[in-house]
View 1 (cartoon, rainbow, N blue to C red):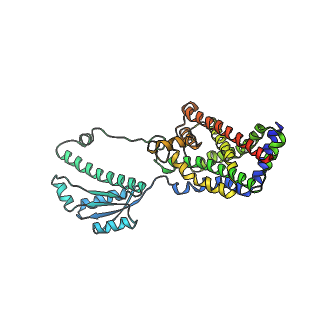
View 2 (view 1 turned 30 degrees about the vertical axis):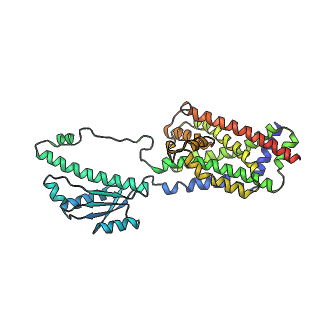
View 3 (view 1 turned 135 degrees about the vertical axis):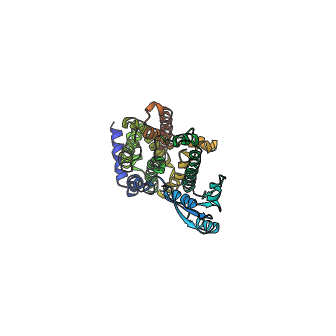
Length: 385
């Protein structure tokens, strides 16, 4: 117990005395968790500008333009020709184009079928989806109204005409993320990655600093006590206290401020986060022995941040990840960690529903514990030599 407490106090003192580590592992978490969600605070992209080419100029074509403009997804403006619409899209002033053909109203009044062209900029998926959805809904609504008037003219009541027009209505109720917000979808997963990467970089900075100075006071403690396990537990305990504080900040403060879904039981979330944080800490303690200076730790671990996002399988479908990379991703705590936390916070599932991910995290913690212990033993031997 004495060896454990001495190592715990020494590690906390080492963390507190390193401004760079505090900046990354504490201030960085606070700043990034508040700054990252800001661009997505409105959750859903609205008012996508749409260039309308009205070649008909009739009352019905103007009505269609007004209906599109009334959609919360779109904001329309009229251009004289298709070349002007294409130029607006290329210049970024429009996210889509709607072309109303000549004789639009006349052909509809005669009972003919008319094609309204709707184009969308597919180089930006959010704009593409919103623009195409808004245009499709507006055109479909006008088409339904025209058909209902024809059916009423044929002698059907309005209720009968509506049932005839849409005998099997589709009612969509999105679960867990009713607004379809991008922030609720992507930010919680990224915050889990922030917890991982900032902790790894902070531990790596301290390890690189010790190598730069030619000696690590924590190894002196390990050698002095002659018991590596209590020292390893003490070092891990110091970072567990630090990361637990970061997790409380993220899930109690950030989730509340930005109103992210939090349907899970706090106890279930805490139990799930325990092996997640331990796996990160022990991985960091293993990697810390590989860095000869602070800069190397920063460069290497920052480089791994973006691959870790895609390998986690929430921003890019798991099925689209090559099998070797998918296997490699299982070595990262964020892969099972993000999957489990999202299901707990957004779906409100109990622990047994994420048991597979929980067991995987404990397995990673055990693996990295063995590697960290081996790295510490080797470092002590080198220090003795």
